[in-house]
Length: 415
Ligand SMILES: *Cc1c(COP(=O)(O)O)cnc(C)c1O
Image (cartoon, rainbow, N blue to C red):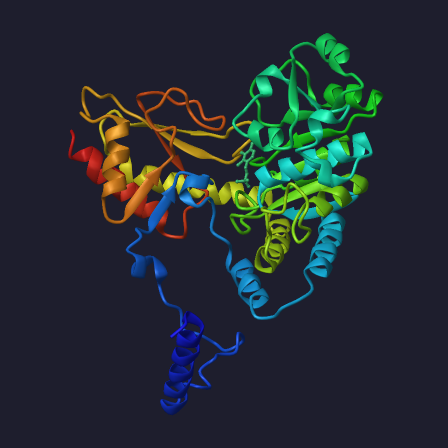
């Protein structure tokens, strides 16, 4: 038998079997209620308590119930993708007080799409030219402060750009040329002599668009419009960090002409550099719902809640000899209270890294902030070999006490 006739025969037989067994109408409606099955258990994946923060490697944040519901509802009906993208963008622009907005597949994706848009607009070239035809284009340089170079550079270089590094304001003024397509600012950078306003001003003197990567920089909630209103032409936020949307969503906010081109670079169009950065209806709706949720919060209430969690953890561990606690709020990224615990390792004979390992391997499995026991720190958290860092903002209700008790158990066993 040819393979085709084999397939037909098999299909025929299977069809008859299904009908006979009464399975023919078991194709379920997408809207039919389902009881949930725990796929983490099914796959044998360990569920964790996130006492770290919004780290990508730990699946960042959990969506609040209202956002989870919005995602589940969106999954039940097909829509026209372009209409959803357009209307979600218009709604977000209104709520976030900017000219235009789009939902991207994360902040990293927004960097690529935004850069592609700057290349397209500055060269007056079709978006299909990015990146493979860029070397032949007159303009492909992105200006950045040396201290702002970071691991997300690649998202910009994907478009075929070349970085031009500057240090002083004077350098910067001299570096802008007819080849410049964009000036890029890393909002949470700890170094760099040129401030935001000056960075924007010089770019605009030369009609160069200015991008600000503020991916991890809410709260405060008002940052969602502070930087576009300051004059940045493009600003990105990660959707799955403080805003608590889907992990693979993000926001690109800013100038309408640039956002329009960025949108044309993305799915469902086949020819742009962003075609592989697909954002499904569930993530678009989830991102919009997360923005609604986030705007309904208050900075003061969130901060009070996080300090309360830190206090409850401290109450559990206060009997550990020599233990000292403090609360640190990083300046820009992850700008929420973090709990720092220090102790004398002569009295408590265990390093913070060993504590982190014991919590990771315990039940329940707990992840402390990755700055724990490390001098290089993480995201504005300055730690050292003697410090345990607890990121409290991603804890679920009741988990603060669990983390406190596990810390007490592990530390008291080493006294
Ligand atoms: C997290 C982060 C990103 C990437 O965000 P995703 O939404 O995960 O793509 C980009 N830039 C900075 C500064 C970040 O902190």
